[in-house]
Length: 206
Image (cartoon, rainbow, N blue to C red; front, top):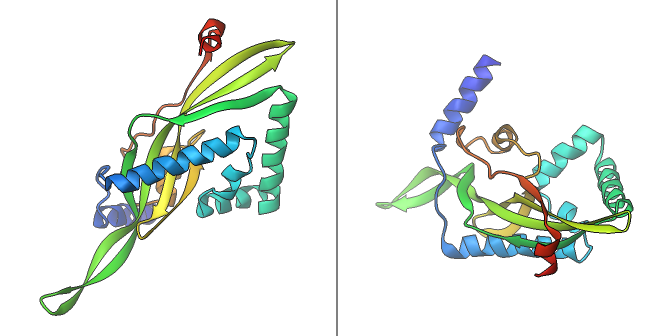
């Protein structure tokens, strides 16, 4: 185990796991637009979209824990059905603030330098932590209330093909993230998860 820790630490240093970085504005805008579209589908009742667009390796991990991908889909369907039974519905979704940007997934690139082919180490994917604000309406005993949940989506895409996939931030830890992407810094901070009940007069006036 200690040897594995040393290897992972070395790999992280070798691939530049130091801090967050920046990305071209078009990359950031593309990720934000993709997250907003994901939320829009959920507000429209197409909750399964979040499962369909989940980051494949994360989906595979969750499936292994439950025994199969079918078991994961069943659990997801049961959670959505429970929301309906409890009178809970998503009424709004938006992103806010500016995402934290990281480069992940070490790979190699061959470039021509002074007439010679030179192999360099590069990170091949963008990873953005995109803050989100979701509002739910809860109806219990004929009383209606609105819950606001501030969290985040992890948006991941290949640098040469910005087709974004996602990991929901709820319950996610830094250890989870670094087990998937070893080049992430050990001291990275995930956006805080915050929830509050919105006073009735506030949401009635919006």
